[in-house]
Amino acid sequence: MTTLAAPRPIGTGRIRLVDYRRRSLLMARFRVLLIGLGFLLVALAALMRISWLGVIQPAHSETSMADALLPPRGEITDRNGVPLARAFPAYALWFNPDAMDDGGSPLVKSPEEVARALHAIFSDLDVTETAEKLRSGRAIYLRRRVLPEDANRVMEIGELALELPRETDRHYPQGSLAAHVLGFVKDGHGSLGMEQVLDDRLRDPANRGKPAALSIDVRVQGALEDELRAGMLSVDAVGAAGIVLDVDTGEVLAMASLPEFDPNQVVASDLTVSEERAVQGVMPAAFNRATNQVFELGSVFKPLTVAAAIDAGSITDLSRRYQASRPVQIGGHQIRDSHVIGATLNAPQSLIHSSNIVTAQIADELGPQRLRQYMVELGMNERPYIELPGRGMPIWPGDKWARVTGMTVGFGHSLAVTPLHLASAYAAMVNGGTWRPATLQKLEPGDAPRGRRVFKASTSARMNQLLRMIAVYGTGRNANAPGFRIGGKTGSAEKPGRGGYRRSTVVSTFAAAFPMDRPRYVVIAMLDEPQGTVASSYQRTAAWNAAPIVGRLIPRIGPQLGILPDESRDIDLTELQYLVGGGGEAEH
Image (cartoon, rainbow, N blue to C red; front, side, top):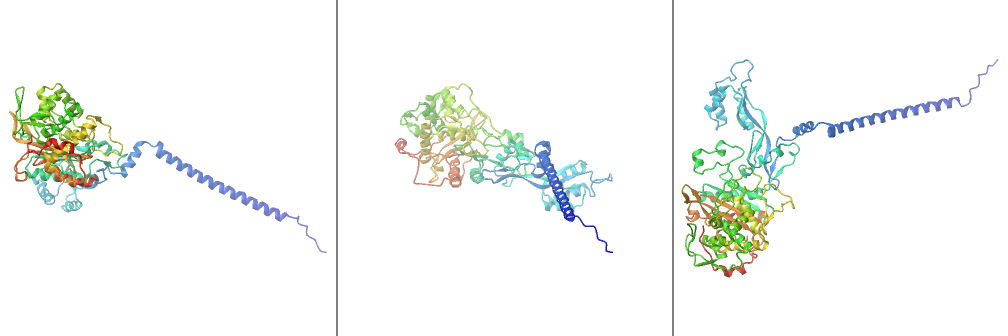
């Protein structure tokens, strides 16, 4: 008999398949959800970490990270990005008397033998002094800034106590260029110059990645130092100083003081001189004559006096004549010229011939208190305005000027100032009448200080004509480089000494501006105690030594500053030419 199987429910297999697929889909969605949650947790963790690093984490951690990535001191550049000072890795030679653990002598050889071996590598090391340091048993630097090849030679000596730690050193790639502007670094801190002024900024990790840009232009600085050095050596001067200043912003494009020093290797004699030499007026090489040494600068003050007289209205007619043949007698003093220039001179002629007699009369008519106020507004009663720490205090005649004081200040005596004082005053005289503080930091367009008005614009325009006339017809002719429309005034002042002025020692200065049809830059060249030599036709006055320096310098720097020679243009002198009548050679 055949047995029949029980019938299967219709659709049971299909239902099971549907359930299986549903469970698989739910499982897949659950896994996707888990993965998504995992990614979300990772993202939240990353976000929390970023928040911790950027907001919550203490500032010292940021500093330590920056310290690990940046050099320990920021870079200094010129206005065009040329490096002037930067950090670089180097070796040092360190004597470690504890290098040997056995408690015996730290050296295998004798101190004298090791000292002689080191002297063979570093010829400037003193053998006796080095041996004493090795014998003392004290840990000490024997030398900083060791080259890799010299470090290898030290290792060949075979003394474990001679260690060569890696350090970061300060390097000045331009050598002695702008040394007085830059200063140097000692024990990690800036000394002198902008290294000292910017010390906190250069050491701050937040600023190390951005170089500190100075107003200096290395091209102009190099040319100034070159011409100033050549001029100083040619007349056997004991020192020199020079400045190139932007008359519209106060930015110093170049500043030089000679003799110079090398900031890469500063020695003790750069910083100090013996007491005997100090009494003789000898300054150490690191002393900045441009900002720190005050002088009676002589006849370069005469244009400032005439400008004040024109501005105040005591000179209203340039054709008016003053007696010039007799010395001026005042309070037991006698003001004279080196020789009789003529019976009478007008104001333009007094500048061209550099007459003390006439300038004293102009200053007397202006009055000592009014002249004093103009000098105050030109900053002559305060230290020069510049960032450098070394700034000389003027020798100022006081609050109430006697009549004789006003007259002598009028031609550059009784008041001693720095060359930078003079540069800023001339900038105010030629730029339309506004005095601005000098700066060694690069200014962005529109950031120049407003300054203060000292002269009327009309006074400045007239002085530009008169300065140009001095270079064309007067004592500044040796600075008159064709096409650059130079104007300026010479000054040769006797230096004071025991018992009065020393006729055998002078300070020679030429203060100039260019181009006089639209003055852009002031240039100062000063020589301390020049001698009469073949190069100066045996003359010691500025017309023969300082003026030629400027005459050679401006054609070198003019094109670099965008001022090309153009003999087809000049400031209009037609109105004044009939007043002059000819050139002159006298100078004081």
